[in-house]
Length: 460
Image 1 (cartoon, rainbow, N blue to C red):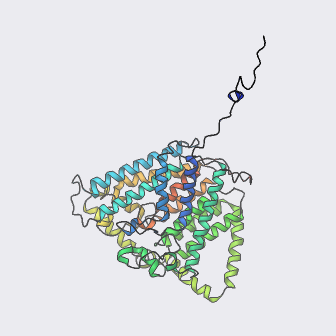
Image 2: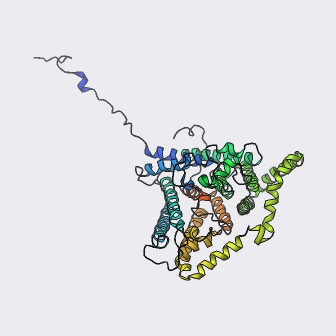
Image 3: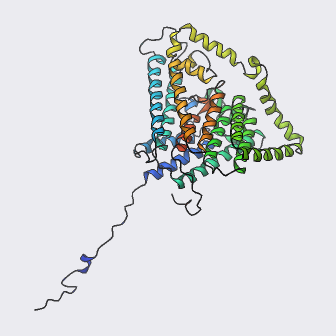
């Protein structure tokens, strides 16, 4: 007896092997990567776009909004990238130590919760400035932590290099166009009110104060210079070692922007950085010489209006070598003497400082990074800070061949810090520390050379 198996007896569809469809899960690492790219691009325009907050210093810019998204993303991307080495973990530990010390200093000294301060507090500004600095510090930690949790493979590094290139050239263009009058300062920030009592120094944009805002980065002339220095160093680190003419153009543009920015300490850092990079790369010295010669010839044949426009910048930078008390250091010697005198009133302050953010209680900032750290965090905090940057410098030096360029930039910035608070969360320097930590994390991510295959550039 034969049994016939037909469609009516056996449903053939039940025998079909269906291949499962790929799950459409959200790639959180890709979202984190694009947020990092948005963070870099947002550095082009740092002026507040949303005039909300208790003070002008916390008015959010586009960068602040991006960092807020990065903070949210940080809770979902919890795994460090596979190529995050011991250097990154060491930097994380040092950053956590600095954060804990800052919080303890703010609570015990600035707010004086334990009654450790035996001298009178001149005002209550310290508690507000301390909160601001802790807020900025939290943003910097968010940026560094998120960068260390994404996999910066060769293709993503290419995209990141493109974002850094755009940010550097766009920021440089805004600085030069603003200085030479191609873009009026009020046009850069029409949303900022003209009242200094409301907008603080941001009002310099709407008032059109000559020489104060330079480009769309900050109201303070030191910020554009050091920002462009870090961007140029990061840009050079992501370029192939064989490139000669493009690095020369980057260094020339950086030097020109540093000249017209009006920041003498920043210009010294730029000159030192350019000199170190050029002397360590002889081929770039020849290319840079050619670029400078053609630039000088163009200047000679330029109109008299161009020379007269550049004269104020030249005169200001010439004052670097003049009187230190009145002109060259803009009265900083007197400020340093006052800050030291305050520390001498209570020798214990040399050890512990007066509290994180408390410098505003007794006058202006220290206008010297190391003195300012000693004033607020004591010699203990200053030693921890120096050890931290010693480790960062060593890690950058041991990185890939181009990684040493960021080490040179770090040295130049630390030298210029003798007359400004470069690596400190002060309002004048906004997200500079965050951008520096971003660059350091990206450079230390991997030693693999960036792929230049055109077919791979669009695959993320």
